[in-house]
Image 1 (cartoon, helix red, strand yellow):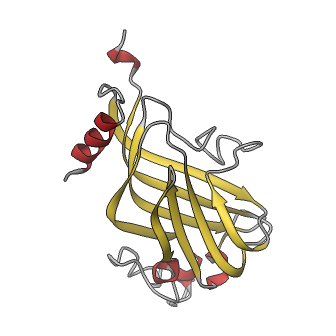
Image 2 (cartoon, rainbow, N blue to C red):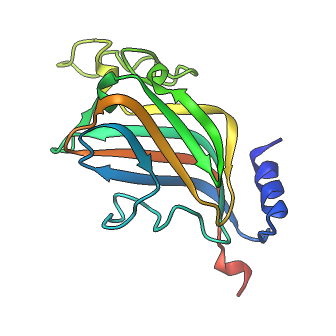
Length: 196
């Protein structure tokens, strides 16, 4: 089933309007200064976050919006805003909860991180290659890049249904900067042009 068909099917089952602008969606959320912890929950707390830290105000999409998630992106920044290794390469798992259903359960992310592994589709297979005349080639270069997970199955986030992303670990060091989770894929947003 195509992304468009899957999204239309879910919207229809939930009684959501079929009108709306189809678009690429990126939903992102930031946790500031998480320190060392055994768990992070993204898309749960929005208070005090600016537009550069999240593009949502609650952990659900509006009644006229929905999304199909294809990619999960995780990044860790230090206090100076420089990329760091996500969780210090400690073994971590990712879970996604939509409504009261766990749609991704304990997915190990280290297979999508630099030194320990690479994205399944080899998206970053040349990340350790020399990028300029002053940087030597090294496999460790890739470990400081964001972790990107391309999903093999689509995850639908329907309108008005709460969702969250959980990262569990055994005391990962996320530091004093910020960690970011972004979900990207296909979606539908409210189109005022359809009603005026």
